[in-house]
Length: 180
Image (cartoon, helix red, strand yellow):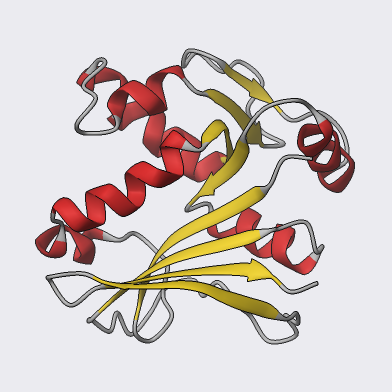
């Protein structure tokens, strides 16, 4: 069975919204951490808002490997939406029907990891439903003071810390696996 991986940029106060604050901290070590996610994933599961942002940002970059554009422009993109029906970005389609059943079907298919990039509302729903196998966080040394949180009140679960990776810029990479 494939793993469902949620990956987020997060501030010290827990915000995962609009990570413009992450840009000054980017470096080769963060690029390597993010590259591991794309190397190990052949499906991207996205919420509508993230899909629309990515569909504007990535296609103009072509197939540049260093930026990640090659991955994002060519990977299978499964979009959770009730409002979009015609997805024009290459290899994109709408997840039909029930979210939990659709994700279980995706996980049962052959392939590598399914990765949720950003997509705050979707990530929260999947964590609460117990469908997420791994959470990859980049914790940035800033406080946003606002924005969506990954873990709302009422979110429960046990996770095992698999990796802690300090970055040169003060960012910390954390990888958690769902505890058995």
